[in-house]
Length: 475
Image (cartoon, rainbow, N blue to C red):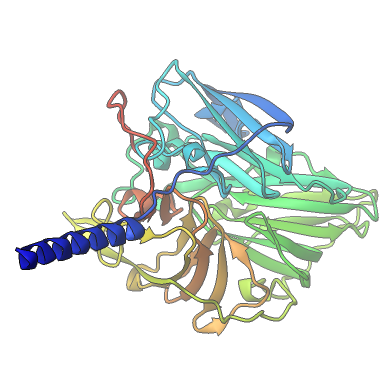
């Protein structure tokens, strides 16, 4: 009997021990970031999504989709630390959304139909609300059937100015885009069916050069130019004066290098902030794209005299050279290493774009745990297709570590990185914003044709369930 009692007590002890260990090791659920707006200034905006006839050039008018009746849509600007409250009113005939590109906000506000919300149905409203914690140049656009809706003009600018930084004399924003003849017939724009060569009209702020007024300055004016690429092509711009690249994707470049008379390339989804002092001599920022439409992007900068300066370019800005700072220690502890091989394949006689040989929705999500440092290696293996891939991560910034095995100077932070054919980049991000976040190519033709996955946080507590009331389409 004593042996039986001893065995029973031993068994109970083992069960208790196992239970205790299980309870101790049970993963804790993580929730979406909560923000308190108490005591903060709330900036309220209403964006009415509506169809509008829009004049692109003297000879070209389109039936655009707009936020507020213009292309780009209503410009939103707030100070760092203030609350942004945006009421979206959908007067279009299709469901839409707003994604705040590059803004590290709570997952609930990311604007991704089928993932963080239902798309906003026609004649319905939806309110986005978050704190503008990070100063910088951002933009907003629909993420519902975005390959078509952004192409129709459904985007706008979002600028967060620093709390204390003194503003330059002039602060101007330029949004680059491409259009095509007959564009608004809106045949399928997916990467599997669309011919990029059909884009034959380039615009800045929704207009070709002939319809835009020049930027007029006085000698000594300090000017900040914010460039946003809302299109699907990489554009190469020539700046024939002294300038610095002071921010990339909204993030400040430490110790920026001074350039003179050089070109820079801006990929879809990227932002470049340039700063210069006007010498008094006018010049033209022009596009060096290999297209007859390039001249339509010319930006005239005029002074008080009629002299114009436009020498041939003296070089090209590279990501590795924008900062004059040496590379800080790269001895970062990585908890997880991810490889993303970017490629192409033929599927049912059509081109698709792949990550590690697969297309969405068959690409497994990248699972991370809150608090981890995650290294991602991009490798563009598109080969003869020579496709460039601006890879965009929602909800986070990442530090660019290396390009083709060489360290990148300046601890550059970005949310969109253009990976050209044959290039390999290493980046690292901190898993500090729980949620389900998209990670995709921002040539949206490529994303809609398969090149998209997502970051998912382990033990994340869901907050959204598809209602089934609308057809959600995140790309």
